[in-house]
Length: 107
Length: 107
Image (tube, rainbow over the protein chains, first blue to last red):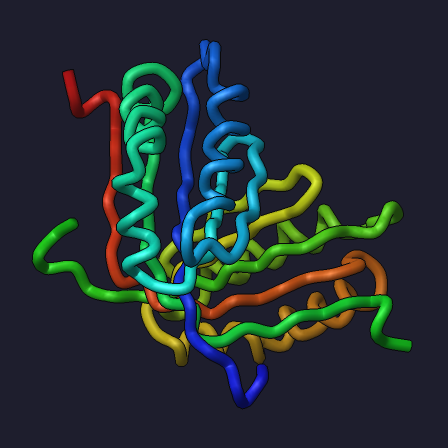
């Protein structure tokens, strides 16, 4: 934990998908490219097994709000509800502390 | 977003593993069982592809601190650094807002 740690925000997106997710992969790639172009975007992590988890990181709550309202992202969200997701949950979080382990930096 | 939403906490654990993770699966199951027994534990989501993401949810920061210091969890953390993880990151977050979509609840 750094003393000069500056809080930022995380959006935790958990989801379960339908069996037929035709078109999802292409949209997912497109949306990730667009997210990276947004002001205030800091990074993104994704993994999927039974459940999918995507966490995106943002400088401010305003950046998250702007991304949620971005026109192509709005279309993707609608398509997601119609066709791809049986369930999803979105959590808006303030990252208050952070620490890291890297095996290459120790013994 | 509910008006009576009560903030809680999320721990975002992202990691990459070594090739040889002998013993990891058993430990992972054991630790999940123990976490669920901790005071203040609310839930957990996990997925792994290139990167692993585990998000656990907690009532308070104190519950997170207690879990971090739990004796068997401390042993697991040490073993993780020695043998299983090439890298990991831990983010302690306050969940400020949350919303959900469930296809079974809509048209």
